[in-house]
Length: 160
Image (cartoon, rainbow, N blue to C red; front, side, top):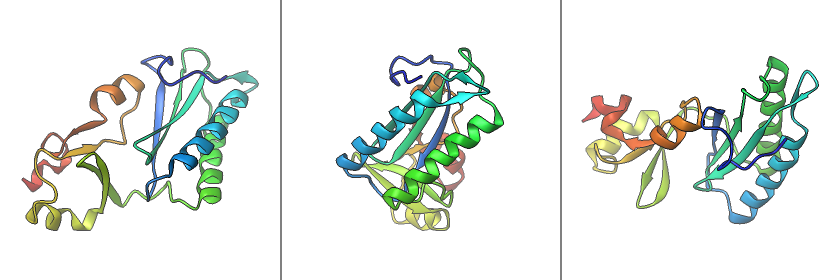
């Protein structure tokens, strides 16, 4: 059962998928439409899940599920990963590449390979104050408070 991201519980569990390129506004609209359809049929052992799918910064697909409504299961999580794989294939994007780190530079998402971080810091492309995305936050509340934070407050602090 779809519920808007703004209205889903702050305790909702989330998964963040980072695209390897920016999505066009048309792609965002299409993917969010498919997400609404998926969320309306997503279930765990026959019980509907209260879920939301939203795209942020035209680059991050975020799935949220309120597990206090009904708990997810291994099969239901597999179904969500299948949905993401289908989206990736259809829109020719990689949503599973963990080798790139995302930063917010001049209000635009900047992706850099892990191996280039030290060089990017030396060149001043990434500073201690550059905002980075923590795609490992576990729930909506953490997402809203801690998803975007200065690099100096993350594992990247060792580069400054």
